[in-house]
View 1 (tube, one colour):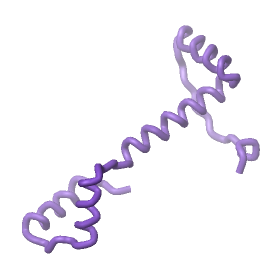
View 2 (cartoon, helix red, strand yellow; view 1 turned 90 degrees about the vertical axis):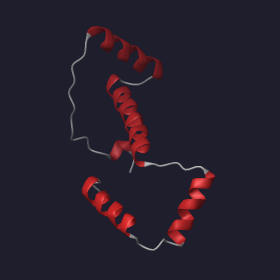
View 3 (cartoon, helix red, strand yellow; view 1 turned 180 degrees about the vertical axis):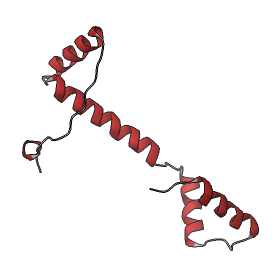
Length: 95
């Protein structure tokens, strides 16, 4: 679905000082965008980067190979691993 076909229903209001407003207006003008379009595209870009930073884990080759090895050949559960799994369940909230 193209942006033109999407009905905009949500609104975000913000207040900023005159210097910040003028800077945003200037940047929007340089990009050939409206202030609203500039703010939305900038915020969405930054939001995507933030989400990726918090939801993506990058492993080096050695750690990736170790991870896949453990997934393919899981270790037997021992008391220490059971304890760690229990702590994980208490501390980590999955979405």
